[in-house]
Figure 1 (cartoon, rainbow, N blue to C red):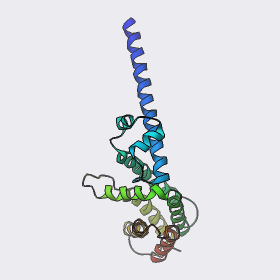
Figure 2: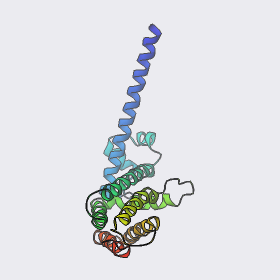
Figure 3: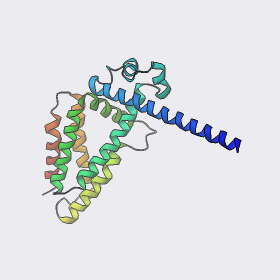
Figure 4: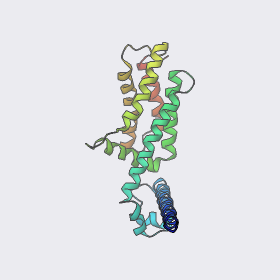
Amino acid sequence: MAGTAVNTGATRLEGRRERRRRELRLHIYEAARELFREHGFDATTVEHIAERADVAPATFFNHFQSKGGVLALMTSEVVDYLSETVTGHLDGSGTFRERLVGLGEDAAAQIQETQMVARDVMLELVRTQGRPDNTSPYLERVHAPMQAAIDEAKASGEVASSDDAAFLAEMVLGAFNAALTNWLADPNYPISERLPRAAAFVCDAIGAK
């Protein structure tokens, strides 16, 4: 009985430690994310993050190898968000054209709201795409719901193109990607206007009513 009590107490203590560690890691992460949004990735140092989180720089390194590790985690969250956003819009109400243009408008608004860090995240996505060990390219995560929506629109007669849905999904995402690439190259590129315009353009190209 005494041994059981000791083991139970040790387990609870370990559980509290792990919970506190997770909470501290999240606190540091949130501080870094705020600074990235306010000042950008390059202008933010580990010392800035530690000061905002009210911890020592050594504590930061107990949780993240570098500030790049924080950005990688943010990028992973963005990929999840992109996938959910694409699925949410394409599964919504309205015509396929309305849903696709709405997706362009929403994506542009999100970029405008978080433009200080959005560019850093997009560049990290590009770098991740080029890694040979990458097993989940972000375009694959959004290609499947796009292809499914186009398949459905073709079946209902909303999309007139005779090309298969997989190819059309590539072309749609390619148009979005082209606008994003131009924005990455030129901070003054009018992304808020061009993403919805790109959506309307590809709708015309694939015969979406």
